Length: 342
Ligand SMILES: Nc1nc2c(ncn2[C@@H]2O[C@H](COP(=O)(O)OP(=O)(O)OP(=O)(O)O)[C@@H](O)[C@H]2O)c(=O)[nH]1
Image (cartoon, rainbow, N blue to C red; front, side, top):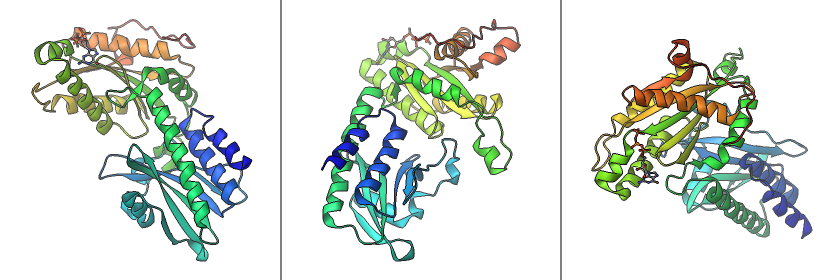
């Protein structure tokens, strides 16, 4: 069946997760010739999850549609509001239900390491024959294996956050997207220039944690900090562990005050968390705006200078590079167009 093999080759040919979901939708459209295929992923913390549309293709449509990267979390449908998807994901089984205009919806769970992370919905005039259901399940198994390989190469093994290797590419995509309308502007029909912000988060006196409590407890602190990062920021924000006790956040928000508030929220969440055995652990945070044409190393360097300033002035605080420059406390080292790598 060369057609299926071609699709599998296409599916495993990309390292970009967005393209992977779009390719999956195209493959199923071609192989099953249904009225439509859509790929939905669950986003958000357990208990508050919502559905994000990753790719939808309808009959005769060439380009897949998806929710935009800046969609507001609250605007997405809540998990429980889509009963068939909920049943599919909770039972981790194929679910067949009634679609629009007498058509049939067949839902397949997308699994990753034993968890259901999303649902593929096939909208067809007739019920899908069993052979086709088996074929979809086989393709989803390959998708899952490939996803696992991507995770293995792109994620930090201790915390599950993205690793440093993937940062440059994501950063350049982000800097390129500067100026796209933000979600808030879109809702009010008045585009607001969106900005991205890069924050460097460095745990304070982490060496003392290791020295006093041992490396295993040190590792547990790193894991819990990663969890606090995930619960503090939005699902679209990108979270990295750069190694050691240094974390990096790439977030999208409309102005400096909002970025500062987000990082301050992180600082407070850390300060108020009771780390088992260790007690209180704090972090020093530096952040900077991602400028159009910015390079990853230049932006990182600015945020790192702000962290250094925070460390030198008492730790457990958030410092913005722009603010420090305006107040004459740091020299303006803005280097637009720097494309050198770390
Ligand atoms: N447990 C654990 N420790 C790590 C890991 N990676 C780096 N470290 C430790 O992190 C510590 C970093 O120490 P320093 O760079 O001196 O920084 P610090 O003690 O946090 O001091 P300040 O940053 O100045 O507040 C070192 O003791 C490293 O051994 C890891 O994966 N697990």
